[in-house]
Structures are given as structure tokens and as C-alpha cells.
Length: 112
Length: 116
Image 1 (cartoon, rainbow over the protein chains, first blue to last red):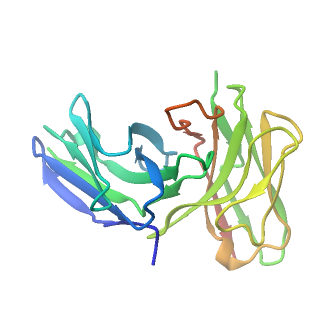
Image 2 (image 1 turned 180 degrees about the horizontal axis):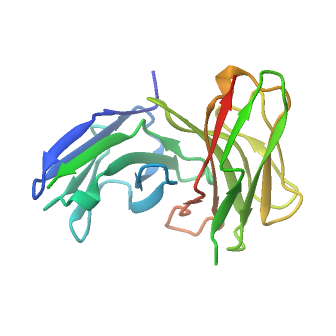
């Protein structure tokens, strides 16, 4: 069983829709939870991160962490065609410098 | 400021051949990483380095070697390529850890490797 599970999709939504992307994990030692965005044939780039449980908002993006359920989510409001990309969740332990564990990535397409 | 660059962008190898992938960063980052990305598998860490002259194994190190002779460069070597090493390889770099925040990893554009 993978430490981090993510539905690969693909997920297709109309422009303006609210998108929900999710990951589950099995290692309770994870403390930092990140979302990376990867456009086609490019390297991933950090979108946002959350420490421990709770919510974090950045513009149209909201990250949520529920450590009791070992479940994290990324919500995208008013989705745009430019949001079409693969979204990867990533996690790490507080003590484990640099070693990220990634989910498989979810491919999102936002149709105009 | 180029960030993280990777050479080459694309390569075709025959089984048993060797090659070296070069990663360079101009952000003076302490940490550097090599990942591979395969369909349905996400990114998996091959090797990483927390400073010049140091390297450590990641999740999938078998069949690969690395060297970090200079702070700005991180080399990934395949001594005897196998079809199972067909993948997209990403290099990343980050600063050292700051209390209360994870290190943001900055990725290069990737190297597509096909082993026949």
C-alpha cells in the first residue's frame, strides 16, 4: 500500500466550477502537507502548503488538512482554463529534511 | 537567474549503455534532489544531497549513482541502463530547513529518457 494515495483522474469540469482534489495518507507522522501544480511537460511548482491540521486560503485556492481522518483536500473556486494541469499532493515529517512523499497526481481539465 | 536547469532534455539509450544527467542551480541552495516520474506512480525520490560532498539514498536508488562535487551541480548516473529506467527525471533544489516551514523545492524542466 502506498503511503499517499491520490485519484489520478482525469477530472474534467466546466469553467467557473468548484474543484475538489483529495489525497489520503497512512503515515500519522506527516506534519507538512503541500500541493504542487504541474503543467504539461514542465516541472512541478509549489502552490501552497499547510502545517498540521486546519485550513489555508490563497486567492481562489483553499487547502484543508484533517489529520484525524488522514485526508487532505485542495479546493479551487471559479476554476479557469489556465488551471488545467496535474495537481500533486506531497507530505513530509517535521524531522525528515527534504524527503517529500508525493501522491500520483490528479489531472484536471477546465473546459471554457 | 535561470533557476534549475537540466541537461539533456531528451535522450534515447540502448540497454546496457551508460549516461549522466546534469542538474545545475543558481539559487545557492543547500539541498538538491533527483526524482523520477512514471505514469500512475507520481514523483519518487531517487537520491538527494543536503550539501556539497554529501549524498543519500531516496525511495528508489537501485541502478543509479549520484555525485555533488560542487554546490550548484548534482549529477545522476546510470551505469547500465535498463528499459525499466525509461522515465522522466526531475531535479529539484531547496534551501535548508527553516523552523516552522517546509523547504520549497524548485524543480527543473525534466529529462525524458527512453531505454530501448
